[in-house]
Image (spheres, rainbow, N blue to C red):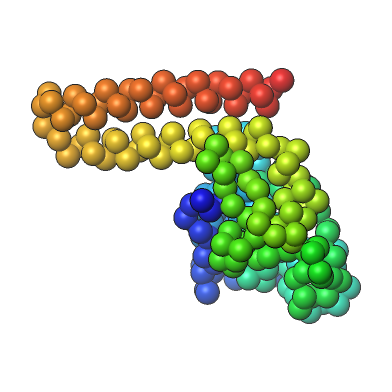
Length: 209
């Protein structure tokens, strides 16, 4: 199972053309292109468990020295939760703007299908594990997915429940009110709603604890 569902795709031409250090103006486009999920850990931004920010794939502290990459260069930006952005900081093992990884250390652009298909995967209970040594470095050293295992699983399961409820609501709207199929779908939606409430309660208690 992939870390992010669906996979993010950056648009070729963003709707705005900010200059200077106004990269945050790209946030609405990034939110849409990354499907309202963190590009790194796949957490959904609708639970208000943390802030979502604009991360620079190649860190500002690195490209500021050469000036070859603009602060607002769209193909270098990532929609990221605060946890992933703060953990990543200015890590860039290759020390080269054109080399994303050096040996078993470095990064894969989250819009590159290889991020999920080659290096990382989602476990059946919502955790994030690695397939390669580079994936292990990203998971443990770059983003601390191992340290955040409980919250990552909780957020994943809460989001999957949200998606299931939304799908059932769509199905329910197509049925005749009071029909046997309508009542069956409604009953299932109620079950998922209770599950959602319990997951969300657990989430709030975890982050407030």
